[in-house]
Image 1 (tube, rainbow, N blue to C red):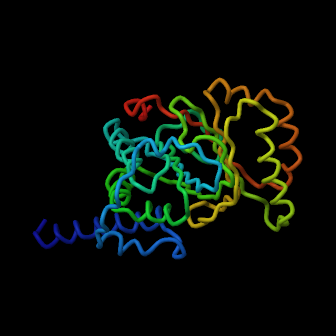
Image 2 (cartoon, rainbow, N blue to C red):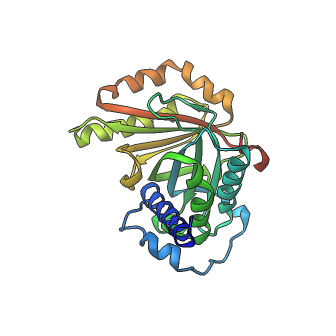
Image 3 (spheres, rainbow, N blue to C red):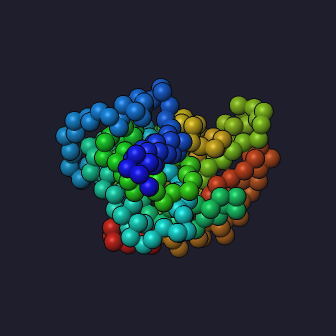
Length: 277
């Protein structure tokens, strides 16, 4: 191969990587500036806060951010470890209240093959936008996620009056549920679905925290509109949820309004070394 051809191949490869970045991490103009600007302009790092800040107990509006990844089966152990280490290091960014990334405990969705998750929390939508455009985040995505990721879903919602600590303790289990409603479902029915999910915490003592809301970032959500997270003391408490008939009865009331579901379970690692699963 001549030198010109080699350089052209390398240029094409870089262009393909940028195209994948735009497809997988396309963002809303309302909240984020263009990806081209992010990659060509280095923004100054903001002052870092104390790590104890993530454990602050709050009862206020919080932004929930979830990314579900489908990692290629050809990904090596080293690639997975590098990806998760890189993502989990983002917890030190000053706008991040809580962040954890790791392998899913169980994917209960037959139509998607998700393998890994990132869950993080922010005080405002602007803080989420600052995180998304931060050079450290963009570098982690480009260098460690895109090379081994086949597909993803990302959703964001406003958690009203989050009760309890903003950080999710190691060893806790979480259940993430994404709901796509049937076409032409009335607003009243949408509100009913949210109300039913919100009421689940009162039906089962094992749920320590529960937030639910409408996704406000539709570009990477594949049509899923309603999102929720339930936090449990551990996997035993989460598994016991399936035995609660009252919760099943409540869900039956809104089942006719639902087109499809994504349900995944995740256990927050006890230490960073265990995050790769």
